[in-house]
Length: 621
Image 1 (cartoon, rainbow, N blue to C red):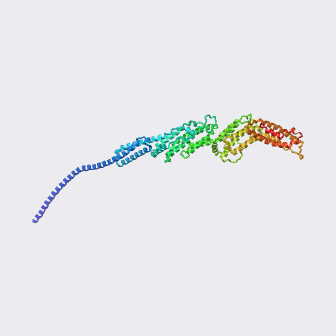
Image 2 (image 1 turned 135 degrees about the vertical axis):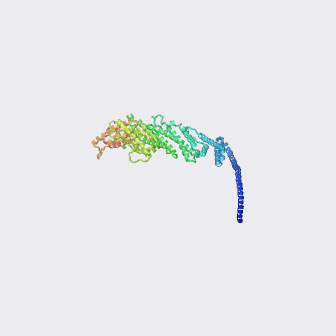
Image 3 (image 1 turned 120 degrees about the horizontal axis):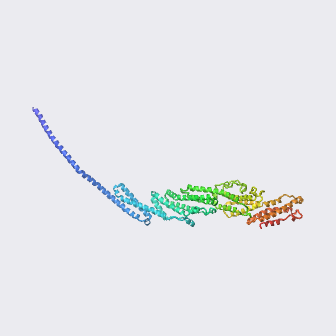
């Protein structure tokens, strides 16, 4: 029982303690809840305060940053104002270099503001300042372009003929102007190259085209009258072409001065300036080519000058992108083809001109055909350099006529002529041969219409008019010689040509004295004297007949000789000398051998050698 009570007491005590602990735990729990509620309330009170403090810190930083930005912008704005003040004035007043320097400074300021914008977003509030600067820069650059154009316009369209007549260079920019143009080009660089290039090319191209317009009307007609032969150097196209050369040289120098640091830009601008000019030049070349083709007989020789013009332009364009201009190169090829045809056509013309002869002149003198042909040859020879250049690509067969007969021409060697000068000499000699041989043929057709001509043959038995035809042709050859001596033909023919002309003349001198040769050939017949020195009766009769034939023939030929009106002293002397040298030696020999064969010599011998010489010497009186 006692033991039970002790345990019960312990239980009661323990229970009592547990109750106390429970009450204490309950109070602690209530206290913790109260603290939790208080903590929540404190948190709700302090959070706005902390957020406000944070915002205040941010605002403080922003204010400090803004103050720094304002300070920086203020410095930039002050700097910009100074440069803007420069740009507000004219370039002429402040000078180009300070003006460009001010623009560059404003561009640097813009770059600084762009940098700040990237690193300080708040600086966007100053976008208006940057926009204003951009407008100022753009406006100033427009002023630069306008100033650039104003310098370009200092040279206005002009009449090139005035400059050509005075032999002075075409207008060009002063060094100062070139320097300013170059500085502006350098400023814009590749950034604005297109618009500036357009300004340059339009201005310079129009300047050239408008200047050339003064000459263009005169460059389209080769002669004022299509029926009048062209006179060397008279075409207005020559002045136009010379002006083109001046402009090409000018633009080459101009683009070099302007774009010395940029070869690509230099070539590009040069091509854009000159392409329209060259295109117009090609159009005029074609107009002239068509005019030549339509009237080769009168204006064909202008082709030499036209070819020179084209060649000179291509030479000057040689180191430019326009050097291989297809249209201009094709024009040059056409002129070369035309020039080759001129050589062939001239021979054809000569043959045709001789064929127009309807009758021999009553005085057997110079005819219009010879004058016309030699005038053409003389004019042809004025283009010696062009002829040499052209003939170097030809062969003799290229110009010889279809009816060419080797024996009729004074050059019969078969060796090939390789040197241009030899070829040219041969061509002109062939022209002279063709003229004289054609006149020979035509004269025989007129005087002996019922038989085939036997040309270039002093010994022809069929040609019964050799003396007259010979005199006629010698007279015309004499004129040919005179024209040759007074023209470029002399140097072109050279020794080879002179030899051929002399050979030609000798042939027709042979025509003229052929009857005299027949007369004297009678004195060459063999007559034998016996050992005693006596002549047989039979031979004596033969000798008498020979003297009689000679006397009769001599008087007739002497009369005929005097009938020919020889006005040229040299020709007169030549023919008399040829007759003398042929007749007198043979007669002296024959007379000396047989003068003593007759009892009464004067009955059969009309002339002593002295008397015959006297008559011969009087032939030209």
